[in-house]
Image 1: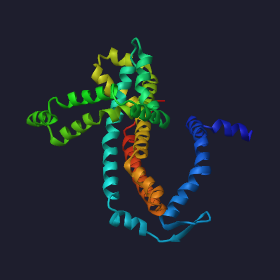
Image 2: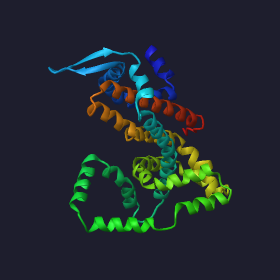
Image 3: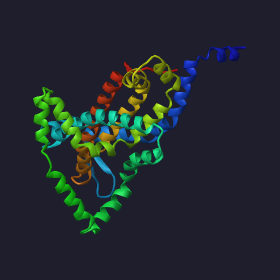
Image 4: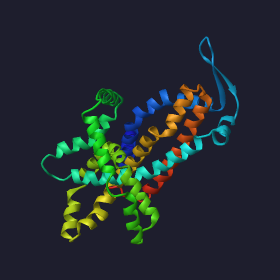
Length: 307
């Protein structure tokens, strides 16, 4: 009787919570088995001066917060690289998120060649793999003329067009805020990077759009809602939970490819300063986690969960 009562008391919310927990169990096992020890060692190295022994192994001399003080006060480029990396992250994340959503809405429509177009937008994710990049560099180095020279001519022809300053002056004369104009100009200049970083996000948004019940669009159509109203009243609220996923993925991806990671890598393996390298990694990781917490909290308050 007691077991039957416990089964009857199991609510739908609790069942979904248990399914969610079971879903993250593989990640949790991997985190505890592999990443947690590495994280502890990173903190330990950042508070110490590490010396590699000739016979193997290493020796740690506890120095407290000296590495952190040197990172902000003594290092010549860390603060500048950290600031620029965080600034680029804050600029790229909204651009990649909304660009991915718009492209996903276009690719979710029914038209001939839709599968091919989806593959084309996902192609940069495959091409950015280390093996493909290495092969492309080898191919480029072997091409001394032909396509290489043609690419240079195209770039030269494109650069000889109307200056960007002309458009900046034109839009500023219309009364648009200079901050908005600079943001748009920066987005146009980074359009290739945005496309390269949007493949996975587009796939996530396509799955989100396909999960929206068609009855909601039918009701909006019956009520006489325009396409603009349908987007803001139906589509956008329904994909908000997936926007959180996209933002988290984009922030982490931007952090992995940032200059701070390259600086930490070079400091460790070129300069052999493992303590300072761990400090760089730890500081940038904490800042990234703080940005994620603030952004996710801001979005989550405005998120609608459809049951």
